[in-house]
Length: 226
Image 1 (tube, rainbow, N blue to C red):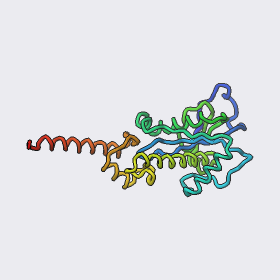
Image 2 (image 1 turned 30 degrees about the vertical axis):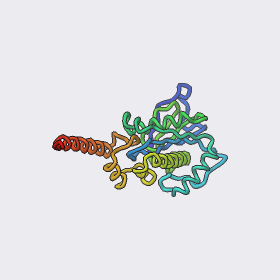
Image 3 (image 1 turned 90 degrees about the vertical axis):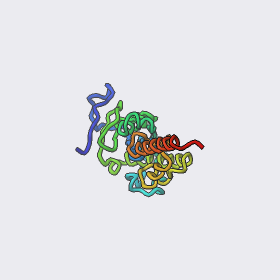
Image 4 (image 1 turned 90 degrees about the horizontal axis):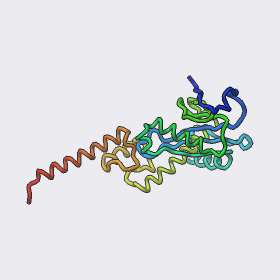
C-alpha cells in the first residue's frame, strides 16, 4: 500500500475532512543504518509564499547542494525542528522505535502546530495531529524532502564532531555506517561510547575485545614467575 493514515487525533479534530486546508509538516529521519551516533529526525512546514527550488530526496543530492538547500530551508520555512534519539535510546528501544521517537520530538518541537503531518516511510510516530505515512515521500512531497535534507545535513555535521571526539574510527568519512574501514577500526579499537551496542557488528567487536582480554589474563596466569 502506498500510504498509511494515523488514527491518532485530538478530540476537536475528529470528524473533520482529512484533506482540509491548513499547515502541513513533512517529517523524515537520517541515521537508521549506522553503527554509531544518534538517529536524527526533522519536521518542516514550508511557506507557499516562499517556494524553494530543487527540493529532492537528500540521498540524490550532492553534499554541496544539500548544504545550500539546508540554509535556504532554514531561512524560508514557516517552522522547522530537528530532534534526535541517542545511541542509548536506540539500544533500549530498538532502532525503529527510536526513529519514531525522534520524529515525534521533531513534530512536537515545531513552533507552529500543523494541521496534518506527512511522514516518509510506512510507519508513524504517535502524534496528537492526523498523520499519514508515504512510502518514497522524500522524493514526492516537498516538505518531506526538506525534512530529509535538514536531518541529513545535521547528522553529517554531528559526525564531524564525533570524529573530533574519537578520531580513530573515521566518523567524518563513513558517518558511522558499517564500511570496511569502520569495521576494521571496531576490531582494532573496540567500540566507543557512541556505538550502538545492540547492533550485531558492535556486539561482535565487544565480544572479541572481551575474549582477547580473557585470553590475555589466561596467558598471564600461565606465565612462570620470574
